Length: 401
Ligand code: NAD
Ligand code: MG
Image (cartoon, rainbow, N blue to C red; front, side):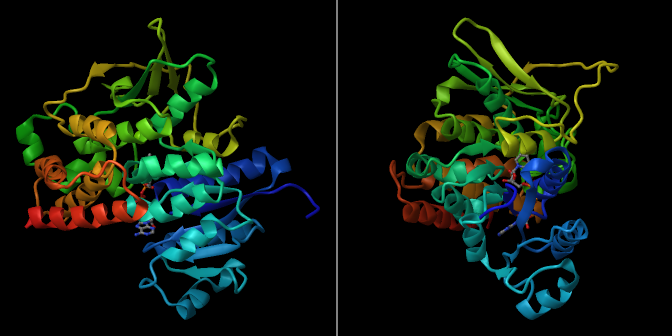
């Protein structure tokens, strides 16, 4: 149709830590890039309907009401309740959509240009696949999709040509290093803050409470990824994510601990030269880059402050205290069903730890055990991956007792 160009963004998982940061980024782009007419076209929420209301009101007040509002948990609200509760958000009667299928419908809607995949865990799989299949630009925060179904995503992307742009700060850093270089690196070096237990003893970790484990020193994030950071399972998932996103072999990926979270990752070339990306820890930068790539725009995330002193420490990762790392490399190497199995076991283990059913130091051994017990399939279909996921959840639940 005629008229000014528009960029319609669907944010799946809009009420979370990445989702709300994405709303800030879209609002910023409306200001700094007015020609392109950035729109929050669709937003989804699961249980946190107050936050969904806040976002809907915020964009309505700016004269740009959402075109689709997705309630992915049908138990959370009825359509009659939704119509009443969201009556003053400027929504059309066709804007309301319910259930997990509505996520896939929005992800592949012809009106949508960019899908921000910001749902946590395996719950984000189908809608992310739908976006890739529909050839959308996918700003990918939901790393679990690549962990569960990396080879499948690669195959679908080969035919749909959907650009997948990382939101995860480490992968955005590598992507930024690659975007500005003609040579192919020999190593990808992921940095890890080390989380709240970077310097803790095994005894301290054994006695860690959910509150201790949720207290991340440099990032404010959702609960699941915060626990993943404490076990360093997050880095394990990121090793697997990097393996599929950049199509690098597991032995070309390395990890270094960097407590300040300023160096977001690095690439090394054949001659031993290393290129890194630096910025203060703020997810709005990698989110915005995923939306505007290859362009760069003024961003609400702060740049380095030239009046400040920054210590930039790089340390080897301790695989003894953090056995998740070896597990990550193992899964990145074996592929097949192993990513789906470890991811599912980890989701159950994290939930069980948060409910105080298992100890912090039980999480990774539980994942290892479920992986050992599973029947490996090197080349699974989506159905087989979902089966492996279901099997691993049961097995993990069994281990929890
Ligand atoms: P969060 O817990 O803050 O938000 C999760 C979002 O997912 C919410 O909008 C929630 O409504 C939705 N959701 C939860 N369960 C759902 C279900 N069953 N079906 C549909 N939607 C559901 O999590 P977050 O920290 O924003 O993380 C989101 C994703 O981004 C994760 O995959 C995480 O690993 C990744 N990530 C986050 C950060 C960060 O700084 N927070 C950084 C890198 C990557
Ligand atoms: Mg990360």
